[in-house]
Length: 190
Image 1 (cartoon, rainbow, N blue to C red):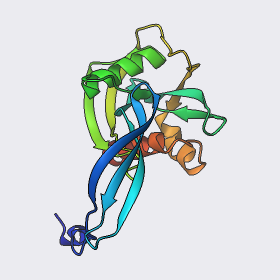
Image 2: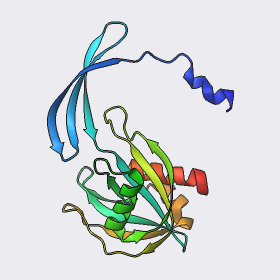
Image 3: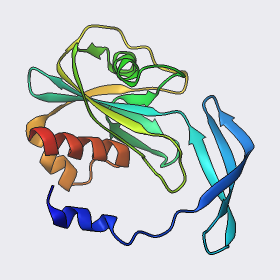
Image 4: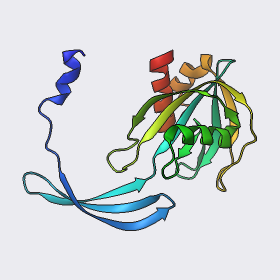
């Protein structure tokens, strides 16, 4: 690996020691608001508030017609429609790849057996404890009926790969997790 890329590992700030954890509120199934006590090596102490939730999966699903399978849906936080990768929370003890395929089928009806993990990341390490997994599904086909969660009302959109760069530059993708997945995909495959 290039030594310039490793230079960020030198002279790191000290780690806080995290101690007592208290659940303040159970937000919904698989998510809770936590308070954690923290102590800095210099003696400072502070409470941190975190959202502890289940891990997420995102599916980058490609058709044989060079399209990405996406969903258009309403998001309460932004009070707007967003164009996103299919995905969601994985169930306790569910393999992330199994969860990604389940979400892809439920939200779009598309599926494929050709799948690979692109990466696992923290979506917001400042205040969330979970990971997001990005999976690439190749040669996807519409094989199933959709089955939405009670709060979901989704429309499947097939986005030509040739439109991806323009859509990114024009800020079409307002969900940062979706944008991250698309840029990760581009770094590997385009």
